Image 1: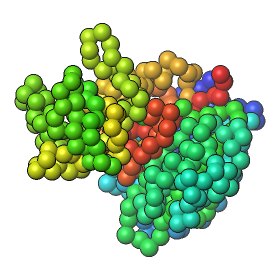
Image 2 (image 1 turned 180 degrees about the vertical axis):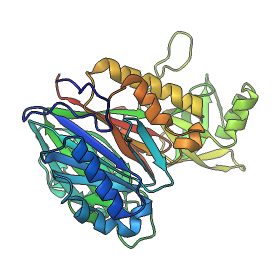
Image 3 (image 1 turned 180 degrees about the horizontal axis):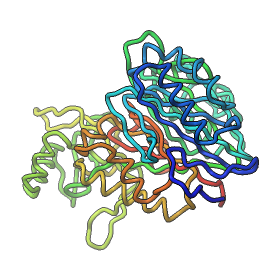
Length: 424
């Protein structure tokens, strides 16, 4: 299979009944009816003639008051067997010139239609008020989701911001479907009296998603966008999420005292970042130490917010449960570090697989122009490695993606999913 020679906003495969196809459209019309008419016209011009297997819809919270009208109006215009999506704080899509765009703080609707031969797609919706027992059997979680795990290799997962026990939902689905790579995010908040999730022709709360089996799969890429500072410490004492004592090279001290030592070797620019962009990298597996003594980069570090400091005892509260013996390292986040890390990860993804059929991006509301100082920072980086792949997605209140073999809820992260042939 080959891409069409012309660059369009939709970038479809040359379509036969046995070929995959991705068709996308993006509208920023402020009125809902006008936006849907615009999307329909774009997709008609792109040559979308047959019902797709999966339609993905991402809309900005500017349409929140009309959200319950969106899918009933959209479905008669566009053809797809299954529909899934969410409202976001911003929208990612592909414009009329064929360039991907990150549209923040404005009305926008992004639609992606996927035709995936020899692929099975099963949708689900979940109510978090009735979670199975976290200590119960795997089968209880499978029964709760209602989809058999056999052959499931990929999952899209979206949660409403009002969903309770979000981390338990993610962990439970990991337990039920350990072979499925999961990406997605928490939908955008709004003031309307309904949820933020789109499933079929309705608006939902709780959690929704789809499991994918067969010839196409989603490859995840999670870019957390931080750089380590100071040495790797081992936790000597911790209570739940409160870090009380760290050790390095046989010497132990409070986290605040350890950080004060690190500050002495930082540049003025780095010291300024510490004021508002300091995080903690929590190792999910032990750091690999090269011969020069620096920690090797890799996906085993989960970057977490620092949420409080107690000056009386020098302890630090972290947005993650901690345990004695775990390794941690302080981290700084800035635009250049985020850009470099993402480029490295996308280059690795480009080297592993053939050209993807589509790319999905679920980015933190703290990224975008607020991080990079200009628009399209994440999608522009993706275009350097995948110049002809349509990109769609949303800005989220939390991003879902795997780190060190387990799925986690992230912040300030770009969680990518590349739709590729499911070959060994």
